Amino acid sequence: MTRELLPTATPARTRAAVLRIVRPHRRTAVAGFGLLIVATSVGLLIQPLLGHIVDLVAGRERAAALAVPAALLVLVGLVQGALTAWGLTLVARLGETALADLRERFVERALALPLDRVERAGSGDLTARVTGDVARVAEAVRSALPALAQSLLSIILTLAALALLDWRFLVAALLAVPVQAHTARWYVRNAVPLYAAQRVATGEQQQQLLDTIAGASTVRAFRTEPEHLERVAGRSRAAVELTMRGVRLMLRFYSRLHVAEYVGLAAVLAAGVLLVRDGSATIGTATAAALYFHNLFGPINTALALLDDAQAATASLARVVGVADAAPAGPAPVRDQNGGGVSVRGLAHAYEPGEAVLHGVDLDIRPGERVALVGASGAGKTTLAKLVAGVHEPTAGTVETPPGVAMVTQEVHVFAGPLADDLRLARPDATDDELRAALATVDALAWAEALPDGLATVVGAGGHRLTGAQRQQLALARLVLADPAVAVLDEATAEAGSVGARVLERAVERAVDGRTALIVAHRLTQAATADSVVVMEDGRVVERGSHEDLRAAGGRYAAHWSAWTDHRPHEDA
Image (tube, rainbow, N blue to C red; front, side, top):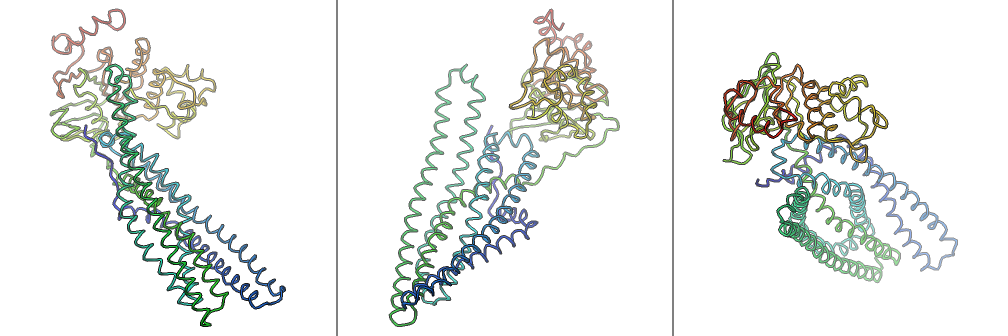
């Protein structure tokens, strides 16, 4: 299957999404940045006070004259510290709130993505975005955003203070700007595509690792370890090479910044000498100007250095927004069947263009009817089941179902937390008695109450481990709680052995009792008890009828049944 990565937002879409998220919190933004402006302005009093002290010393004033400016220096430091802490707290709150909103939007849209779209992209792409990209954006919000805001304010206000001392000091300081501007443009031009490529390479590397680890048993069985190791190594080399290119870019970036610093400081010192010589400025004023420019080193270097974090975070943000800002997939059009039936007409589906897996399937399921899908692997059973359940959208044809369709597959995820909370995913307002009733319906109440803490037992990752049969019973109990009109089961008994499968088959019968049901039958005993059996081959329906009629017809189903019973004379025949 061709990899088709999930969307990445354009710069315009990224900015629009961020503004949309920040807009409800603009009061916090105004208050936070306003406090930082005041704090920075107060801090700019330090250099003139130090210059005044220099003038007092140069003028051989008495030591007592230094008391007032010294006290003011202490007061300025205290006020600036308090205001800066308050402002940075508000800016951090703004960033964390916006990040939380973005995360929620990302998860909401990620869960709404069509499954086939995620499959085409590969789980590595989505995993890289939800882990690495979100973490990079979070780190930028927590550290880079407050630091960048404070640095930019310091730069702007310090340049204004230089102009107030003497406009010629400002002109001298601005001699460094062309070098810094050229450095910034050069860096951004090279960094933006580099970091975008680096994030893609990381996603591809993670996808290859997931594919290799997930298929480890198959890889070992076919002795293809060297080939897979080479693929992992190749993807890793590509990611490392891009990382080293980024390191080399940063080294060149900082060397150019140092040139700008020396040019600007030399110009300000030269201006100070000339202005003091002709009496236009005092030694204290020249000292204050030099201190102002020297104090710009930190904010300017911080702001420009944060371009590195900003570019990496922007590339990650565009990938997160690409999913979070995607138009939500609307529900497939359905028509109420007045009782809960299913109607499929001319259904065709292809995961890849020109490679159809279903061809013109027609199928009617009466309200309350239980239909079993039978066929060899690759016949199209699971694809048809997912289309009926609404997991995929058909390439052609229509699927009409009533509102309320639920699907249970052989791959059941147990969420970490109390068993009761896991069950309430299907119905959040369910009472404990309703949870027990659902478990009893699928013959799971006995083992659930025998757990160390009963329904309060923590299951899932880090909790009590459930067997394959228990996980399937849990999924069927969720189905009972959700109470859908139509139930679609895709080999929901495949994970259990013979004894466990019989338990699960009874649980399936009870869970779907009274519902319209489409069951992909892993075991033909499920087909034998169904109201109707549909046999598929090469993406088409080739037989349909009751279990007895199809056996008597001597066709494909009869051959399947004969092969099944010949191999299981004592279990299921």
